[in-house]
Image 1 (cartoon, rainbow, N blue to C red):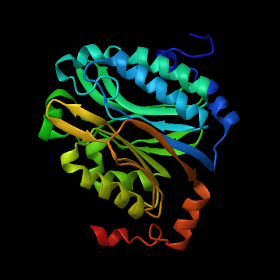
Image 2: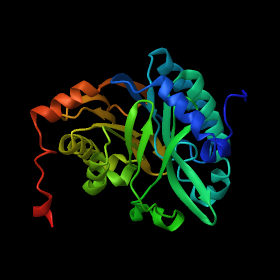
Image 3: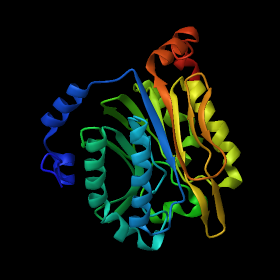
Image 4: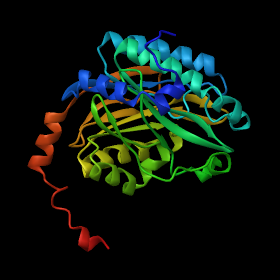
Length: 289
């Protein structure tokens, strides 16, 4: 690994001054390209999944995409019997993403297993364009229908991540069904919310509707990266999506195939939407108790 790329522990615990300086040098961008990678996450096959991601990152780099969202548990899937082994590889994976993000000048995000003490979390990491970990979020709402709550420990707070492209709100899959978390992220300053997911085809219409609803009600950009393919008897048809603050769908991978797509994010457009329809300013919190 190149010397200028920090190790996982250095990026997590130290060198904060250098990270901040790097972000200031690159600065926030009001207009940039953001995308998602939709693919068939192979259960327990980290190296194969990583190879697939790297191939699509190369494609997106050629399109000058600056922010990429990967699916939920993209490195290994919900290989619940071997989560501890997969989580122990997370520092290695983050180092690879760090070098890749810095080399390609892009933010790379997605959720992978995190081990802390005796607990395992479904954690969304944000690797910034300078190779630093800009932030991480532990999934708060665990999906009991598939026993996720039996294998993972829930997070306990919402997270806003300050990056070289601005403020990102972080959510994961099932979180989308809870309007409180996206509203909290918006009120904390998020202009764009990213949502890695493994949302099955049997309920995919809810994913489509809720992604647009969260964008409209909060006047934010939404980028949802869902997987495709089949795992055991469960079919995943993708429908990864990018929605603008007015609710317009900018990109939608509805055909169920593996792909890497992008759309232009324009923060001036976001400001225009909020000025024209000032619903956030016209909230009446005292009436909501």
